[in-house]
Image 1 (cartoon, helix red, strand yellow):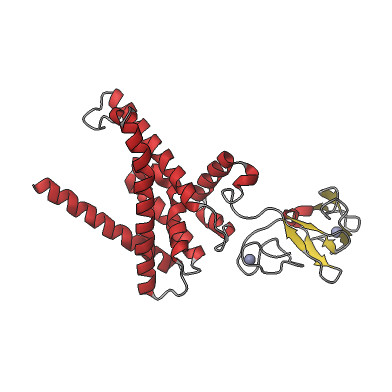
Image 2: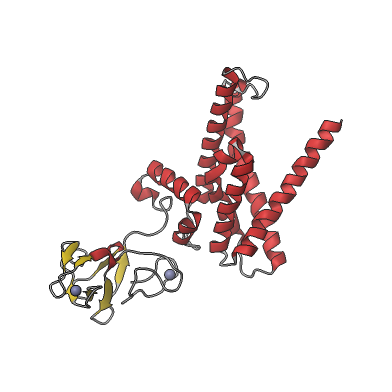
Length: 285
Ligand SMILES: [Zn+2]
Ligand SMILES: [Zn+2]
């Protein structure tokens, strides 16, 4: 019975949290060979054998025969009683990594929500070694963001705010829409790799060892979950994007929050300045 993130052995713990990396788990996330482990009452230490087909105690909630307090199976400590006893993890990884099991749309929606709300928890569950189709996820996010952005612009335009919102309807008609369908992933993927490359350069400058380029790109790609906010309301969206990317870098590269934030923020500042410079020089001409 090992931690799904760091592989630490989770036998006989007072709390269902990995002492090594802090990842929370539930005993029912694992299955056990029958008669190979004891499940321990958290109140009095009374031991129980698992009886169901996954080797877990039945029912999942019951009163202890010794101390008569209520027990929730998900939170019992597990103690091996035979040589070579093991717990097989059933549920691990992120909703996006598990999309073949949970379905691509629910997996995508769940992953976006989790990344936006609690990126630390998301990246804790995302094994650094597991390739999870982050670029595919990222491109889907870019399409969603573009659709939301264009939809809002269209609404504003129709509401008579023509001076403020550009007329985007030409992009939604043939052949504009074809350009849009091709340009969104092209620009987005180019940005993802460029940003990943710049992050890698800063990390290298900071002396962070063994950081793989792929992991930096993955952190940037998963940050795309908050792209709609970036497009619609950049002051908040960009900070949010930075927080998610920073969290990904911190977990994938096993580095400090300070270094991750520096690595995520410096390329943004450079891009921001370049953008401002371009804007001003175009404005002056
Ligand atoms: Zn762990
Ligand atoms: Zn008890």
